[in-house]
Length: 142
Image 1 (cartoon, rainbow, N blue to C red):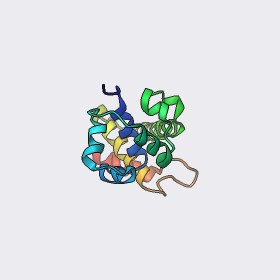
Image 2: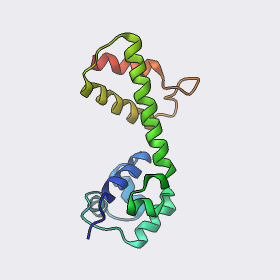
Image 3: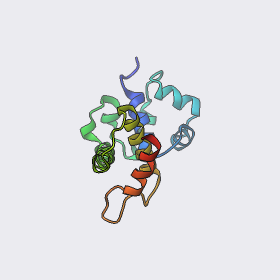
């Protein structure tokens, strides 16, 4: 019996850690195809693998199994960072008086968030999202 939503939570952990499926499978000591089966909800986690997730990534086993986001502070940070980028983009669109298609706006947020996760110096001097990066993305989508 597959655990509902397990694959989504594993994918979230992997993305937060900025790992490919190959990298994640290596960190867990399993094959990539085995890991993909977990992400696709085609296999349930073993207790050994659940312990490995806890040891490697400090992921709350209860959250992995049950999906209670309140138990994993990294996901709270993930959501806060996503919101921070979305709000910065919205503010910049308003400041520039732009009209952006909602789908393109979400594409821009996703692009900026992926960049935010992979670049250490993404934030400006005061910790806010770098406006010059937002402007570059806005030029692409407007």
